[in-house]
Length: 248
Length: 195
Image (tube, rainbow over the protein chains, first blue to last red):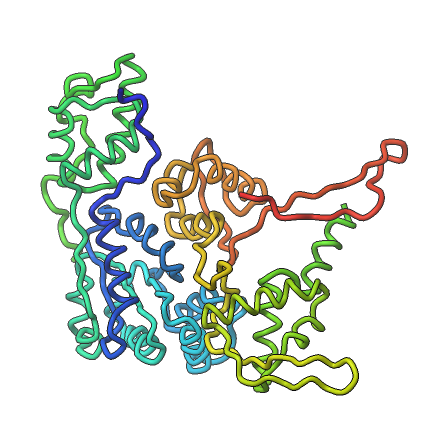
């Protein structure tokens, strides 16, 4: 009786539990051990979405970096998330204030998302300093080149307690996603296998395809969508066959 | 609608609730001297047992520590416990009666999830926060969208105004409206809506 399956229960995707375990490990670590960690993987593998469950469980402060993040803007964002609504002063003063706030609650992790934007800049050492001086865990989330970029900063790199690579979506995760996203619409095994193969386990692309499958089911008036109804293998939103040319 | 806003301002000016007590305690601690329950009660305007009850939970949870006991003074001055703060988180600790930590409220979890995914439907929020019912997530998102914090496009919301670390609260007001003069009369009280 599939109608009785609760469609909005959590998908305990592998990345979700992996990240929650990572936070648990960091929060309960031996205080002598360093408190940095990195969670990395290609774009679209659902890193941020997977992090939400763990972040909520440990009341984490969450900051997102961008292309133009500077030491000052990063510190300002961190302070705002830690509970200082209008950060002011020079970088040193802001850093000390951030450390003071983090010391007050050393079991509360700080999550820095899109960390690959800052991992090649000198001020990435700031994260090391925040974690070292406060004892609170700092987790960097970034794309797959994050560990490589951090290699340039040995001081930061050797303080990373745990390197956690994000996992691509496998058949088990795919089934959970289907239950969550498609509700009563079913995917025939051939379509499921084709989507998983064509997207190479990229969660974002899978979700796009699942939304399309629901559309197709509505239009065709069927409850089970197979590969032919979907429009063949070419209709699947898939990873490009060739990697893009590197910019000159 | 002016009285309603004034009431909200007023309740912000006078610290109340556990958030208020905690902000008073932090201010007292910042002076560097140990303090008593009376110091906290004097700075707020609630029943004594509300403050002492919270102090008890804080002590059991290891957030404050008993450092001394003042002996009873002359006349009717009773004995008092002197405390100092040991752990000082920014937000007021939410504790059970035995001092163990309570999980975050649904709205705090949803607010963090919104800041993290940025573009989402109510179902996405529930997927990320498994303990929260769909209706709670949807109601909260719609309230925030109505206030302009999120922008709504069909079932999809987008975070447009990141207000900061504390989750926005949804309040409900009880008003007395006089249809003769077409005015709200008397004082209005706003309370937080339970999730």
